[in-house]
Length: 637
Image 1: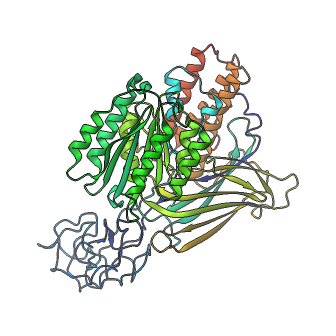
Image 2: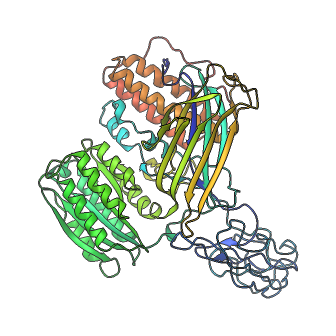
Image 3: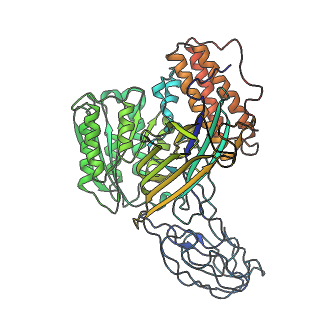
C-alpha cells in the first residue's frame, strides 16, 4: 500500500536532541521551591543528610545548604509524606555547607542519615515531612528526595503541529511547505535517563539501527539528549514584564479569532503573579497602546475591561504594532525580570512597512537589547514563515491556535514554563565519524552544515512541561513535549571501521550557566556495535527511547512525502499508499510500546494520518489497488 520514500530515506541516521530534566535518584534531602524539604523525622541513630539547595526564583544561583538539622522528638511521626518512614529519633543532623550548584547536594553525602529511617515504632508529635520549607537536615530516612523528574528542554521556534491539523479540518491537503519538523517533534515526549554528570545540563547519546518504514533502507539513529536535574515548575520563574500585541484588523472577526484572543488574554490576566507587569497594544491601520505597562496587583479589573474593549477594524500594520510593543517593554526593561513581547496575528502585513526582511530586521534590533518575542498565529492566511522566523530569532516560540482548546494550552504553557532559561549561549556541534557523512537535518532552521558535520547555536533553552507520553491537555493537546534536532547521515562508500569500532559521530555541547556565567563543555563519542552499513533484520536499538524517536521521524517524513505525491507528482493513490504503510508500522509499534501499554503520542499520530487519508479521498484520491505493507511492519517487536 505505501510506496517508497524515494531519496529522502534511502539511508538515514538521525540525531535527536530531546532535552529533559530529572532530579537525582539518590535518597536524601527533598527538593523544595527555594530550599530543601525536611527529611521527615528520624532515622534510628546517626546524623542527618546534607542540606541541599534547590533552584532559586531567578533561575540563576542555587540556594545554599540548610541550617544544621535538628533531631526532633524521638519517634517523630505524623505521616511521613513523600519522604522517609517515621522511626526513632536520632542525633541532630548536620546541615551541608552552603555552596554552588551540586546535583548531589551542597555538602556531605546525599540524603542518607545514619541507619534507615524505619527502625522504630511511630511516635506522637513531630512535623510530617514535606517538600518545601526549611533546609532542615534532620535525621535522614531512606525514602528522602523528590521523585525523579524527566522534563524535556525547549530550543525555541515552532511549538506545535496545529496549522496542519487546521488545514485537514478544513478538508485541505497540506502543501509540503506547510509541514514544520520542529513543531511536530515538540508534540512528542521522549523521556531520557537521569543525568549523572554533576552539571545542570548533561549530554547523553543513544544509538539505534533499523530499516526505515518506507523502503527498508538502512537508517542509523543517533539520539543525543540534554538532561537537567532542575524540575520544571511554574512557581520558580522570575517576575515578568509582558507586553501583548494584538492584531485587531477586520479579518479577526471571522471564525471567532478575536474571541480566542480575548479568552486567552483574560486567562493571562487571571494567572499572572501580582508582581508581574502587563501592557496591551493593538494594531490595525495604526498601532495604539490600550493599557500601559502596570503591575497586576490592583489593576486586574482594569486590564480585563481593556481586553473586552478590543474590536476588529481596519487592515494589518504588523510592523508598527510590534515596534510599539517592543518600545513599551524596553522603556521598563529590568534585568531582574523576564522582558517579553507576545505578538498575535491572523494575516499578512497589509499596512505600513510590509516587507518581511524589514520587519525581521527591526525585531532583531530589539531582541539584541534583551527583549524576547513569542508569536501566535490564527486562521489559515497569516504569514507563517514571518511569524515563526520572528520567534526563532527572538529567543522565543511560535504557536498556532487551531481551536478553543489550544487557547488555554498555549497561554498557560508560554507564561508558566518558557520564561526561565536553563542555559544560555548553547552551541551544539556534530562531527561526522570517519565512516559516516551528514546528509540533512530536521528540526531547526538554525542548524548549519559545516565541513565535518554541522552545528546549532541558540541563545537560550527552556524547560518544557510535559512529563510523559500520556500527559496531554484539553482536546488531546500535546504542546510542551520539548524539541528535537534530527540529522540524517549515511555510511561512506568504503568504510574501514569494524564492528564495535566504527565511530558514527562525536557530539559536543557548550553552554553558559545562568548565575555563575561559567562555561560548561561536554563531549560524547558514539560507536556502532556493527560494521557500517550492517542491518539486522529486527534492527538494533540501545533502548526503547530510540525506538520512539525512529517512529516519530518516519511518521513525519511519511506525511511530507504523501503531500509531495499529491501536490507535486499528482499521484493521490501513491500518497494514500505512503500513509497506509506508515500507519501499519506505527500501529504495530504502538501495540508493544511501553510494555504493551501503548503510547498516546503515537496513537494520536495514527489518528492524524488516518485523517490525512480521509482528506485526500475527499479531494478525489483513491486507495491503491495492491498493498505493499510488509507482513511484519514493525520487526523490532
